[in-house]
Length: 91
Image 1: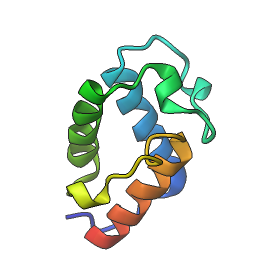
Image 2 (image 1 turned 120 degrees about the vertical axis):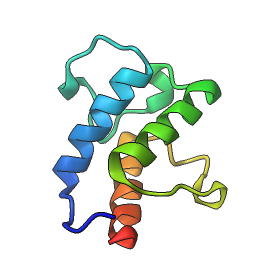
Image 3 (image 1 turned 90 degrees about the vertical axis):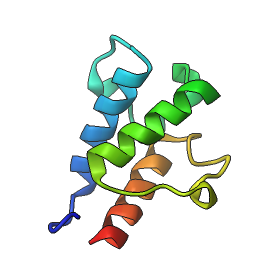
Image 4 (image 1 turned 30 degrees about the horizontal axis):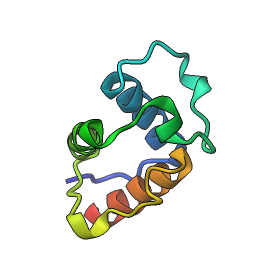
């Protein structure tokens, strides 16, 4: 259980690492901005599951099917906001 709040920057940095790892991309971290469309980076249904598992492990959150939406992965910023909300709920 998280005891301290993560900043949006902390979450974005860790999520960038997760996205680059899951998608096996060799890009600089700053290539992924809050406006980046994750599907444009190659995110597909098969690696969405892997990314969700990575997010749960890194942030000690539980992601339910009801949490998922079509827009969640459309912008990197949406994912950052989602993790921020889930992290706040977990505290």
